[in-house]
Amino acid sequence: MKLVRKPNDGIYFTGDVATLANHLEKKANDRPQSKEERCHCILAKLLLGSASITIQQLSNTLYVSRSTVENDLKKVKQKLAQFGLQLAITHTGLSLIGSEHQKRQATVELISQYWGKRTEAKELNGQLVRHVQLPDNLNQLFEPALIKNILTALTELIEKSTLSFTDYEFQSLAIHLMMPAPTGGSNGAQPVVTPFIAETQLLVQILERRFELTIPDFEQEYLNRHLVTVQSKDTSVQTIQTELR
Image (cartoon, rainbow, N blue to C red; front, side, top):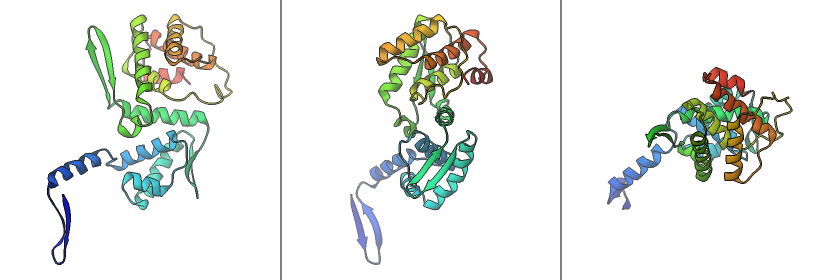
């Protein structure tokens, strides 16, 4: 292809224009196309990024003007406020003010909104196999190997136990396991001691073997409360969220 510039004629391409058009269309589809998608992208960068980000950097990433980003930030602030988080704007960029627990809760909510649109469940040889594809702007924040290992570990748990997960139960547990463990343990809160069931001990063994690590007590307690809820068959969203607080 060539870019031609002629006086009194204008600027135009010659050559295989269709190939370029298809390439540009594919690239455009990979970027947020609406205000809602841009806000989700900004939230992901703030919640899962390790450094501050400037409005200009967001503008360049999203291919929109600074004024558009500033307008999107109004909605982002409202969403963050639901979790007790505030957005700080300084000369170094944008950053979040709030506890690790608040950030974690907001991140779980963010990923959950994408998950439902990107999950398939198929039956293969009598087993329910879940295929998970996170959107590109979130998929890059989790190592593919991590996602694969987490889902494989949960599949092993299902195969070796009598537990039956709903989509919501499977999703919430997988998201929790994908995220980094919160700093400061259980945030100083007094844990509710629940007798460990055999399935919890099995899951801990599977995770420790696959990831070659030792799971702390407060994290084992969380997993136990989750699996106890699954075992009890009280699978309403409200009940699970209450039990896991």
